[in-house]
Image 1 (cartoon, rainbow, N blue to C red):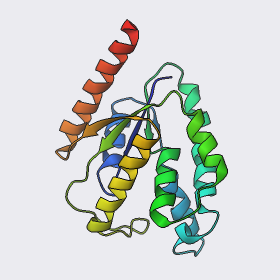
Image 2 (cartoon, helix red, strand yellow):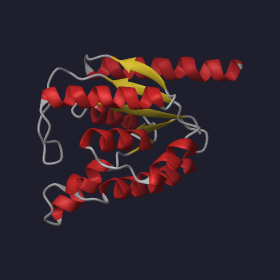
Image 3 (cartoon, rainbow, N blue to C red):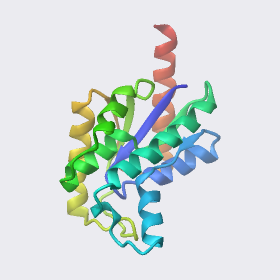
Length: 183
């Protein structure tokens, strides 16, 4: 199953791109951290990212969603973030990454291409996204360095209109799949 990861700073437009790709018929794997945060906030814990087992909970949900994605067979699957993002989040928050996180990153062999969605020049706050634009730029850099250090191939998705970004991703996927067929 060819898989591609979308990552970037909070508020960069990843979810809008994923929704567009999904509506166009591509299977997607949802981001785990936002859902873990939403659940904990619904349970009365306003800042679950400060809890010691937060990264483990995110990793566990990522693993379950990843296993479900394997059912898609030969379809191209788009992942909204990955365990590498969880490592970047740990680094950004100063948390000790769970040891299983490094094992999970080592197991990532099908999704080596990462679409790095650049910020749009602003961040809209949500219940789960309480980050300033300036801090999101720092977090964007941590993400980029974490992926590069882990040996992933980054494909830039510059700021711009949603349809332009989606078209650029689809064209890059077509080129990458064609290159894989030739080799």
